[in-house]
Amino acid sequence: MSIGHTLLGLLESGPRHGYDLKRAFDEKFGHDRPLHYGQVYSTMSRLLKNGLVEVDGIEPGGGPERKRYAITDAGVTDVRQWLATPEKPEPYLQSTLYTKVVLALLTHRDAAGILDTQRSEHLRMMRILTDRKRKGDLADQLICDHALFHLEADLRWLELTAARLDRLAEAVTR
Image 1 (cartoon, rainbow, N blue to C red):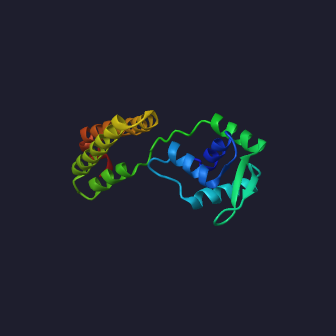
Image 2 (spheres, helix red, strand yellow):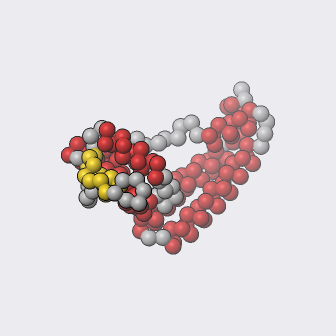
Image 3 (cartoon, one colour):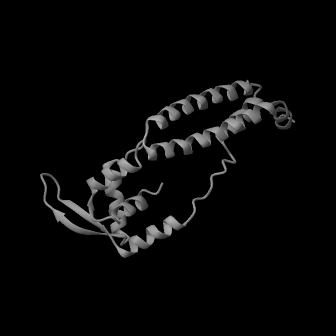
């Protein structure tokens, strides 16, 4: 996720302080990985330097001065372009799991056991996500669905690989 673009998008509704941007980000997108304040302020500093935001006002506070940021026309254009650009699909052509299975075969270790252990871990995570989805709001449900669909695809791969393990062992140990 592009934190800069996300913060710019949040600014389109109106100027905000860094604290307010962090709170809005965490509420909408940071369920599992909230932003650190340092990330917000370093990102805003970079966006300011690149002309994508401007300081809309400075207010004195009990501590350091509070800057209120506003998105510039260049920032709006940048967000529009980012939203219109499709994300590159991640094909996972060199997955760590595949590497572990092949290395297990090459070193005469239990590749089937690795697949079984991974299947158990995937199922455990799927139970956690399904419970979270059941209790969550629409945003949480959609996030969990995305993760669950990926885990289901991984499970299909685990099953396929287990079914082809003998053939894979022959192919990699020639």
